[in-house]
Image 1 (cartoon, rainbow, N blue to C red):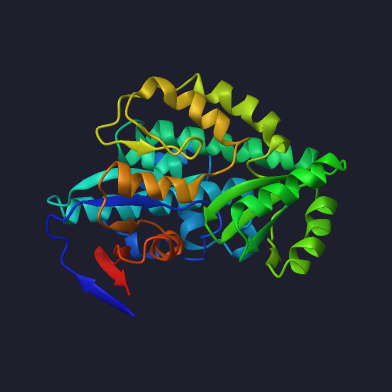
Image 2: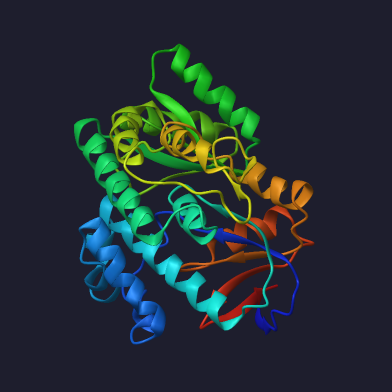
Length: 314
């Protein structure tokens, strides 16, 4: 059930989603609003026609890694900007973003300018797409298993010569694995034999694994060309699930993120126990992160932004 609630001054953690939440027409509600000027800035900086992606592009186009990433980045930034302008009294304890969403979090926290963020997201998406073309990969979601058991399965398969790693630690009962397509397919057998659910994802890249090493090197070059500033509110990084405010460590964290697991459940834990967040708010298309937060911390409200209002999912 979804209800709306006044923002008041209750502090919250702002969450930004990654690739996979994109959908056709996801930018239509911001067309003609003051925040739409961001689209021109992102388009110029990234080299993509972002207006067309947000308004007209179909499912097949939006499935492309580079186009999906710049689209989700922009839609999430529009959502955040509209909300911030409508609710200047809202208090954010910290920012965090899942994979690509970490770049939106860095912009929202003031660590990156919009244009620099767009340049990095454009470079990141192109580098990842190029790496996947040269070395195709696959990913699968494992549900109902302890993360430690999934880690052990991937380690055992690597000892047997397979390229398979843990890519996303989303929750205590949801882990994503990635690697060579044949290894991802082969892992389904033992996963199902253990009583776990196993779903191969519709992607052709092994994100957050060693397969992205060429992309990490290419991204490092782009990172050297932008300026990071100290964040005015902590950003919890995917790589170490720790809060960061000093812009000096951001380039290394961004480069490592491409070849390291996304420690999302640990990130949520840091937001709650380390930074005192008493509410989660998901900015961007859909409400994937609100759902993960609600399952991880059922006693803490988890919301998504709809039409400039907080929508509480209970």
